[in-house]
Length: 263
Image (spheres, rainbow, N blue to C red):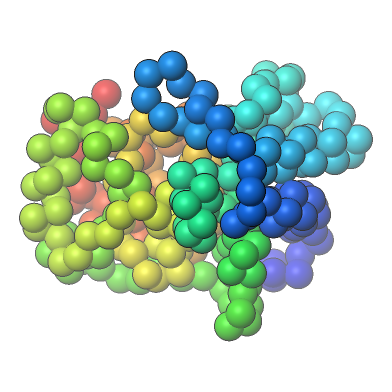
C-alpha cells in the first residue's frame, strides 16, 4: 500500500473537519474551562467543536461503529469497530499558543488499534499509519516514516510529557532513566510519538494515559517499525503506563527497568 491508499482517505476527511475547528480558535480569544475541582485539566471550545465535527461525520457514515471521545464520552463502545478521539491532545500547549498539540483519530477493531492519524494544522503536518506502514506530510513534503536504530539507553533521546505525572513509585525510575539517556526533552504530548516515528526520538515513557491519548498513535509508531506496549509488554490500547520505542533492543532494556513499577 501507499500513502494514497483509499483506506486512508476517511482518516484525512475526519482530520480536515477537526482542523477547520481548531484553527478557528488557536491563538485567539476563548474561555479556558477547568474540568477538575482539584488540579487543572483545561478544555476549550476548540476541543469540543473539533470532536463534535468528527462525531457528526461518523454518525452519518459509520452509524454502526462505536465512538470514544475525550470530551463527549462513549457510544456503542462494545461495537467491533470503535473510533477513539482526542480532539486536542496537548490542550495546555494549545492554550499557551505553542504548536506541540494535535488532533488524534484512531480506529480500534476487535480490541486492536488498526489505523491512526495525528494532525497538526498550524504546522501543516500530518502523521498516519496502519501498523504495517506509516507516512507524514508537511512543509518539507510527504514521505514514509521509519524509526531509527538505537541499541541502548545510553544512545537514546527520550521524552515524556511531564515528570510530575509519575507517581512516587514511578518517578525514581524515570529519574534513573534520564540519568542514563543521552538527551531528554519534555512537553511533547502526541508530538513525541510522531517524532519517534519520524526518527527524532528513540523512546517515549508515559503514565496515566487514557485510551484516547494513545490509540491513534500506535498504528503510526508500529507502522514506522517501532514498538508500543504497556510497562509489562502488553497491549497499550487502554492507556495507563505506556512505553514506545523505535528499536526492539531499547524497548527490552526499558521494560526491564520499568518492571518494578509496572501495574
